[in-house]
Each structure stands twice: as structure tokens, then as C-alpha cells.
Length: 469
Image 1 (cartoon, rainbow, N blue to C red):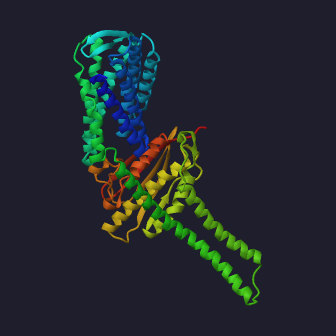
Image 2: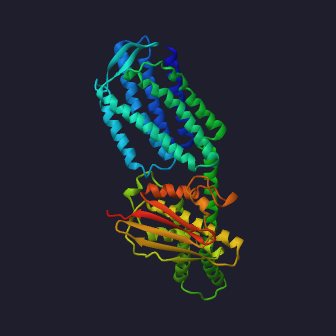
Image 3: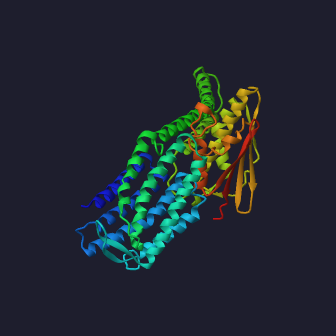
């Protein structure tokens, strides 16, 4: 094994280890994209180590060259996909991502043929018995690589300009780590085009997994523990609010049913003439059905959704809204919040998952409730807050507006509103509610907008597509 073999293999397996650790810890779209990127880096490394093995025959080295470059085709593509998901710009760049994958697939089709790697040059470089010779399709790969990589760094730098605090530090660590990896890897293109330079850049590539591991251990890169703790706090806060409402909504009909039955039993035991037992049972059953209906709504809301494409589903806005309002109505009574529901009850279905639509509306309505409560706490606590729900119909899309008379959002905070861990509630917030909401809206093919005036209130607008199925 040559030093080049060792360096590339260390880099490849180190990258795979970091990618696997990310996937095991996080298990979301960011982790999946990063793991895919790590897989293709590893494939390139294994193939390149075969190519650079001084004991390899021409046939084995040629296989290694074609295998390495086939894996390398998808390195810049999966890297850009990961970056766009990481900085939350993948939805607006869908067409670019699709085009890159299609181009990559077209290139890889030629990977076993001389059109991609035409052959090998012998003793071209010190320390390398064999080196790749380019076929015509290889040039397309070169253009793809040196176009995609700078673009990926540009997207990260743009995100760096708008990030702050710990998020900014983590992004800086990731940029630094990947810079070492790509500088080392890009030098392997030069001898292919007759630029004879020593391949010392290969020796700096192992720095990449070291920096990534350091970032994860010392600075929480990818926010494993922080995200888990914040999700737990968000879940507990939601459970607490729902529990208060469900307890109130269930208790009243249960007490009513108990009172009806207790009165019947007491009168019957005293020998007093009572009403028809069937009428008593019907009244008690009506109250029990009310309680069961609340429990059913709560169970449906708490049940996880199946991992299917939400855009293949149909959802009812009025039904989703009513289910949410039934669950949080008690909270509105406590906080003196008046609901103005201007959404018609006969709306046609939209293209969305019913359960996820309910979660979107729940998050936005509860968020509006908190904003109104904040304003009441710093002003007149007896002041009634107003939450207005409105609907706008467009040709192929609909807009749902949630408008509150809350504390409003300062302009300097508005641009960070949908970022994870950014909160305007101080220690009472997790900074995940609106982040999760935005992810759900985009998963259903929609978008979310906000307008706000500090001290007067905010309006969140969810735009989704109509269902024509």
C-alpha cells in the first residue's frame, strides 16, 4: 500500500463514519442527504485506491479508475443537495436538483465504456503506476464538477451572511472541512488534462473527517442533542396545552352523564317515580358521546402520519380547522381570545395530508395565542385578543390567513423567524414550532409567508394547491 492509497482510504472511511454517525443520530432529510454524499465519497475513494495500487494490473487499475469516477459523478450532486436541504433552500431549487441528478445518471451510463475513461497512462506521475485518461464524456463530468462545487460553496457563504451565533460557527466549521476535502480531490483532475503536478493534495483530504468529528464533538455540528432536547420541550408544551383543553372538554360531559345516572339511581332507590329509563340512558349516552368525540379527535391529532407523499392526498380546510379549534377552545376562553372564523364551511378539498394540515393550523393558531397573551401581559390583562381566520381563493391555489392582535415581530427578527432554535418567546420557547410548520407546508407543496407590525400583531399566510383529483 502506497501513502496515496492509505490517505485516500482513511479519508473515504472517515467520511463514511461521519455520515453514518450523522444518520444514526439525526435520522432526518439532512442526515439522509449527508449520508448519501458520504457513500459516493467512499465509492470514489475505494476505486481510486485500486487505481493507485502499484501492484494492480492494467485491467484492475482500469476497473478502479472507472469505478472511482462513476462514484465521483454524484459527489458534487449529492453535496449540493445536502447543502440546499441544510440551509433550507431545497424546495425553491427543486428543478436544479432534478436536472443535476438526471445529468449525473446520463454520465454514469457511460462509466463502464471508453467514452468515459478511455484508458490509463503508465508512469505518468511519481508514485502512480497508472493514471486516468479521459474519454469525451469525462469532459462533461469535469464541467459538472467545477461548476457545481463553487456553486455549493457560494450557497453556503450566502447562508453564512445571514446566520448568527452558534449556527454561524457550525456553518464555518463545515465550510472549512469541505474546503480541505475538495481542494485535495480537485487536484486529481489536473494530470488527466496533461498538467503534471504531484498529487500531494491527496494528503490533506483526511483533514476533512477530523474537522467534521471535532465540530460534532465540540460545537454540536448538526445540533444532535440540542435538536432532540428542543423537540422534547416542544412536545411537552403541546401536550400540556392539549391536556388542559381535553380535560376541560371531557370533564363537563362526564360530570353531566354522572349526574344524570346518579339522580336516576338515587330516586329509584327511594322508590320515587322516575322518567322512562330509556330517556335517562339516551341523555347519558349523548354526554358520553361528546366525551368520546373529544378523545377521538385528540387521538387522531396525536397519531403519527404515514410516510407517504402528502401531495397525493386530499384535505378539508374546514374540517381541519374545526378539529383544531375544538382542541384549543378552552385555552382561548382562559386567555380571553375571541375567534373570528371567516372561512366558509363548504370549501372544496385541497392537495395536502389532512393530519399534517391540522398540525400546521394547530401550530400557527397556538403561536398566535401566545403572541396575544404576550401583548396582554405587557398591557391591559383584561384586554380581549382577536384571532381572525380568513380564506382567499385563487385559480389553482388557496390561501389561509391567521391574523392576530398579538405583540408583533420586530423587523430585525422577522428574517430569522423560520430558522430552527430562533424564538421570540425567550426561555418559554423552543424555536422549533414555526420551523416545523414551514417544513410541513413545503412538504405539502405549499409556502408560508408572514407580515407583522411590532406592537400590533402578525398575519401568517399558508398557500396550498387545490385538489383536482
